[in-house]
Length: 505
Image (cartoon, rainbow, N blue to C red; front, side, top):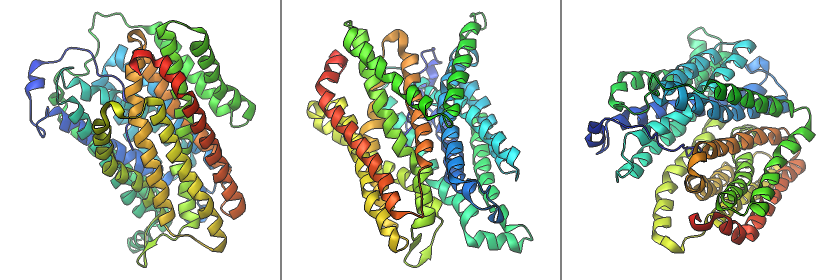
């Protein structure tokens, strides 16, 4: 659960004493504010996401929405897509109008309202809650990491360690959330407790959503109480500075148009294919016809953009395809003790906390001998493809009944290894390749790759069929083959992509 879209630090000046403050493990005390705020924000996000697909397909008689799987997958894909797509608009508003600190506050309050709305048992509240969480995430997500960077001078040697602590907060929240919300929503024990209280046990799903809301409330409470700890980091632009209202209108219109087209593509597959083919045109233009250094670097960025879309399209099926596999086809028990299927959603965060320090050490240890960026991306795709290749025999084995949870644990391990090779490398590479005057746009492109990948993940999840083991094996095999083909293509193109990157490769 790495923060997959970290923008560049806020360049605005900050109060000098902020840099000398060592109130949190040797770091500015403002880091503790952002650490806990982001931990609870990710708790709410991943806690709700762990339940979302399962809640939508659960029968009405058990408190779910009773939607068919294709429709549920469309909603899931559009929701997760919107959360990242709206980050472009949210970042623009923060940079030019209200500042990062206020964007985190406003965004967090909107997210909180969204989670409380989801706790209400009605279809209207369900859609309104999803919309509020997506809008709030768009405001909060691109700004809170900017605030972390704003606590340090560019030359401060504590900066990287500070971000490492911050990411630990992200993964602590992502790890704990499904354990809590999953137990509330899925465990028989909690249903018995509700009966004992004289309440409807089928309301358990909304108790899970309510726990996510409480987590977000705690995060916002911490953030507001310790807001002064941030010094001047992320303040709004000066009052006398002209606001780019026309630019805002264009960003709003562009975001709305793209969002509308992608949602509409659920009914028109040709439109989806067209939209996802456009980056290939950009690669051809910048990589083959632009001879200047900036053009070549933009060509390389688009190559990584396409690879990232495919990566997230498979990886983000953790909350849809793999969640359904865990619920319907996996023996969710250890030593005879059962556990909610949503608990599998904690595994990735656990593996990230275990593997991130190892990979950080590995790249430093290898020094100049480490693989190039295109090869690292290819390795990320390779492990991702292997994870779905492993699902092929797992799916076939379901013909004889539910399978061991070890299958999914192995799948999540392979995917996390792939994530370590691609996600943090992609963030670093975007910041290196981006021309100075296009830095914000390039980070927006990285957000967009995540958004488009999430959308495609939802579309692909519509083909999951738990009742057909042979078809399910083909479902995973076909995706593994596509990822494998992209891996081979990226390895073959690696020398060319390195030339496009030039001195920044």
